[in-house]
Length: 147
Image (cartoon, rainbow, N blue to C red):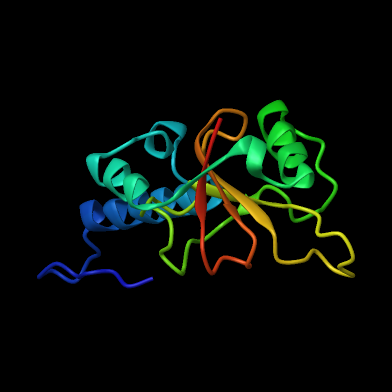
């Protein structure tokens, strides 16, 4: 740890305390992620980004996607171990939000030997998302799900 020395050669206690406090804060945020309040903010930018995405009625989605959507709102259980993991939105296809806002869920693809390309990505609280999106092409495009 780097400490700053005072003119007399002793470590500055206030700077040392501040460094410890900042490190503890960083560890806490890394361990627990943003607070629920931070995740639930619907900014004007979020709403504007929402409006640029095409929509798809839930009833128009494949049966498997409708089942996953129902599981999301009931809290599971989910068939795949990766269901519910954080979706990083690296493609920036969805409205920009803090890391941890989006979670992804696998939509079974009949005939596929692996998880396949279909997913539902939801943002917000796990059992009460602000919005959910469907992709049939492994994140190349998204459509906002409307009920």
